[in-house]
Length: 110
Image (cartoon, rainbow, N blue to C red; front, side):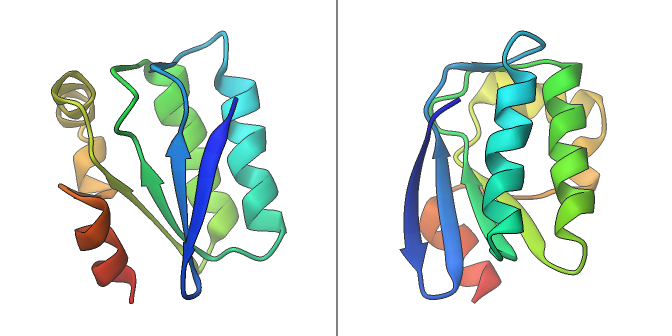
């Protein structure tokens, strides 16, 4: 799984460079983000602009990363409508802070 990374102060912004986060790629997805966390990144914005599909294994991977961050923060932005409906259906929108834009997400963590 590829990520495009950018820094905004002490905030890491990761853009997922895939159109789907599903069972066949979820291991690489989780390991990729976990690698950034173990490097010391504790404030992460995950930009899902290119992701148009996520399944339950992808949601599970996000929960695993959230637990790994511990006292840090993981927020999401630029969520495709189909992905947003999956978050609402599973009530994951109550667990994750979701923002409409990258700038809003960065401002929330600043």
